[in-house]
Length: 590
Image (tube, rainbow, N blue to C red; front, side, top):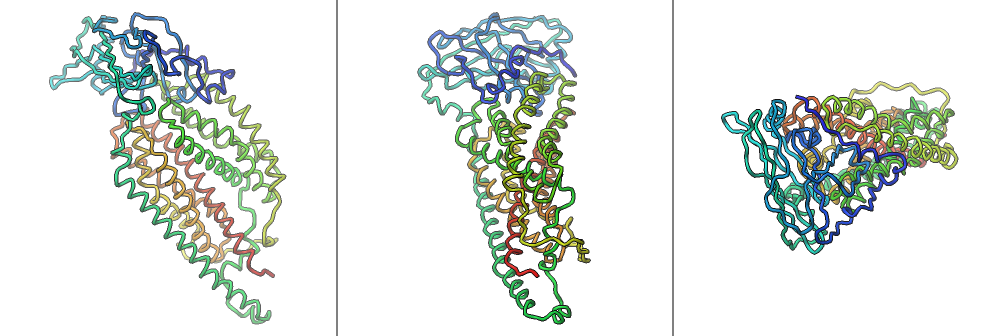
């Protein structure tokens, strides 16, 4: 069912290029954002969005339902950040006059005559368990639209009881209670009332968000056990890699040294095998070097962005500010564009690439184009549904300006630096002119088998943390244990490197020199396992329904999995590259 949607464009029109950096940092000079009030000063009640409870991301403007506004029509200030716009935050002034420490007795603020269309809209909302969100001083409140009884009658909560806790001259607590259950009938008269109660609270301002957190869920023993289990996996894998490096390679070196003592006839009659035999092929440029360097460069950038975002969130408590984490991530991605250009351009140059401008544009545009393409499809569905998640045109202009005037120039600088500072080949072995034919081997030593198995252990190391992240994003939990996330992220990096090194060793030992793409894809195969788990989570852990929520879920989960895959793939390739260079640099090659 579609609703007539009231769209407020006043705040969104502020998101233009002249306020680009203001949107990044979420800076505001408005009094509301100082969180300091004088007695009788205006306190703004913002109405955000309304939507079905089981579809958290399917939200609509609050006044898309036939609610009515209060008597106050003027507003002192309003600010919207880029992150808020992209997340579908639709703050609209409620019109309810509220002043600091001034209690308001129960009184009517508006009334409506419920027409047939209005009745159907409210009935649909109640039937589908619609809830709404409001903000006072950046503190959220939630309420349900109404409820239904067993006889199929629908009721609406028409009274809002707002309790506000204050400590000194700051608001530290807000609560909303819906009262006065009124039955919905066509052509009936509905009166909406509100009440404001001020209470002195012992809660300190820095701790006012603690009530929204769920330590019993996020700091459960299972969470701690998963961290311990992942840590033990790291110890096991590091030990395995150390055994390969210290024992197996030592035997290989001894065997190859013995071969050097033989004369040419004995060496020809001997049974030579192993990774040394492909020394003339192992540093050959991989197929599709433009694509490969583009993916590796993007992976380097995503790695830096992920580490910085988690660290900033850990230190800065970004979960307390609407859209701040997303705004910070966008800023970091734009600012780290030289990292992508540097590593991608240097790698392409080392592989003998000549068309560096093509590689630069491909690397700069690959991930933003992937995001924009996915978001365009989701945005099309959101517009069809008249959902608040539909991204406005002005926000698209801002994002386009970021790509054209920030990401692309910084990427060009990084590419030039990479080609000139790290673009010369420094392989320990020369590359043969004629490629060596690949020997026949068993199916379990084929690259595709190694790629499929390469993501199992990395996924196992983050499985529990993925569940907590999914629950916080797709359900009604606020993720705040970024210390856990940072630790699991570091564990994932170590596990991925160890797994790809082991996989590459066995691949080279079977005299298959296609290790670049194999190590890259083996590290990135974790994304496939995470996406399969996302399918399971959608079917068995949520009650989501409808086209919009389904497209939104699987679209953004695909983006997240691709980003994770590129990150882990790059980590695996870099670790393997160091390993391969090390073993071939310590062996005497004719």
